[in-house]
Picture 1 (cartoon, rainbow, N blue to C red):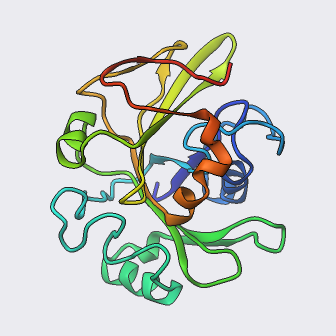
Picture 2 (picture 1 turned 135 degrees about the horizontal axis):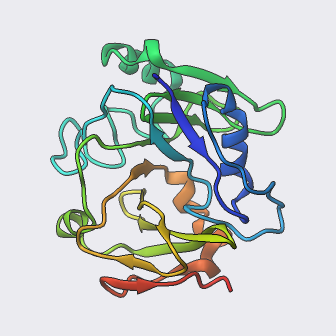
Length: 237
């Protein structure tokens, strides 16, 4: 089906990511919400970044992540968070032939977010404005951690969090590149130790200047330094 499924998995997701999940349930066929978050809870996987699951045959190509064409991160399809307007973004989606498969949502009155969801792609607008705040997508071809490090060097920080349930624990990781305002989400793994390998794939790519500007304030204590390929654990224990 031509839908994007947002999942809020884990016991300590941030308020915004879980709110995005709840507000987008109209576009979902299946989703898992393990526990309603509290403001006092520490953040979880990629703090306020939705997790995309591709449920569509339509593919989103890497579109400049490596080539820089037509534009380089944090630009996607000439959509630049913090600059591009809603009208401009919609026009681009129409030109790309994807807009007819997209859905808009608006939960700002309830204190939530407003944006557009498309197959394997989402756009969120800045609160109370028509400016794009973030854009995320699932690349159609396999991109590995080694590919990214070969191009952009080691990540500035990483974020690791336990997920799942006690009976079936899983763990997730995201790589953060501050200069290009990019977060890369890796597939969750079984167990309580994340094994970052050269061949580990990149599951989702998210561009957002607002995430990076306030990252230190929100999840600074939970960020870790990249120490090379190997095993990582959640520091919030």
